[in-house]
Image 1 (cartoon, rainbow, N blue to C red):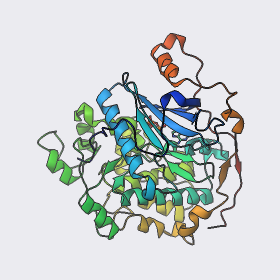
Image 2 (image 1 turned 45 degrees about the vertical axis):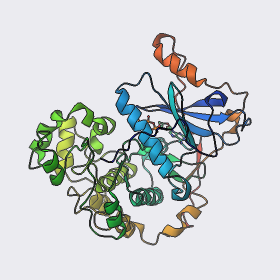
Image 3 (image 1 turned 30 degrees about the vertical axis):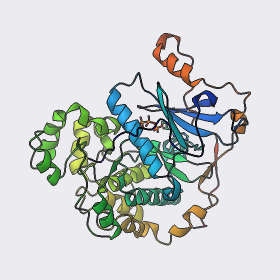
Image 4 (image 1 turned 90 degrees about the vertical axis):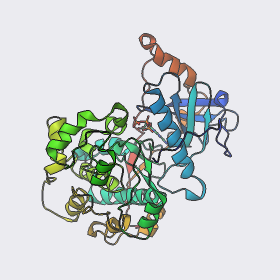
Length: 410
Ligand SMILES: Nc1ncnc2c1ncn2[C@@H]1O[C@H](COP(=O)(O)OP(=O)(O)OP(=O)(O)O)[C@@H](O)[C@H]1O
């Protein structure tokens, strides 16, 4: 199994030490199933909040599925640690610091002031991005996924809500609690552009649909159908043990991939769904209910409005049902980078693009001490007492983003 044992240390050794008592939360940035993310600064080290950061806080005592959430939180810290230092990447977060108190697990990552790609898409005319904008974001996401895969991590949670926009306008992927590691030999195999047959299997197979080798491995434990077809899928789903459902709970059914939930091609499938959503404003396989959605995932081809072009071809090749035929299966990200949709793109200059499609407006006024802050401990106490909850301060999708189309640089 690839999920590591939880780190034992109370504090991550890092140049930025977090001290819960010194932290001032400026506002709540978002709330997920696992924790709440605050925009914070250190009153002592950074009294003027010049370099605030995002602090994800998980309360230890009130977790449902306590063990599972705790394990996922520690795993996320571990992934972020892995993505720090010399393994950092411009389109991925790194761990600034983490801490554990009796009541909380918390970790700090760089603040992304531009909100997420979903919020940004909703601000667009017709709720879709132009192909040029899709191309820019996809290129950065492909680079981020490529780096994760090279680090031996399969992301498994690619969706617009998990793609944040940095102040510079470049992207950052967030939320690594569903990710998994691959065996070393698999990583080597990827790097040497050979096939992807030997992926690590998780102890709790979170696959919606397990590939044949996984099925063999677990057949004695779960009544997994030998042949994977539509009937088998629907019959098998309710038999998942409760602790195997974490991935499914978090992943909307319309995003689930046909096979190999723990393997790299699942990220390329998710990239196909994301590309479709960014380009058409809707999700390709959504049915009237879960069953129909799963049926669509397994058998329906994505439909396109308008003429076929390089973009629709890319989507079709990423949404190939058979992972072994899917773009990216043979040679990883290189295959996607070589697709005609990206023709002429200067991959080496992506980070140099000074004016990405949308650059968040600076909103410094919110960061001063005069702004009423959020007391983190009080915030969690209020959550336990629903009748006296203060008015919601849930994240304002980021401040105005002004459009400055200049993708000529790459
Ligand atoms: N670095 C960041 N900068 C700005 N906002 C952030 C940052 N990280 C997270 N957020 C905000 O907080 C929200 C929740 O974060 P995240 O998805 O990491 O939490 P989660 O508990 O793992 O959520 P999920 O339910 O998806 O598992 C995000 O959707 C985003 O709006």
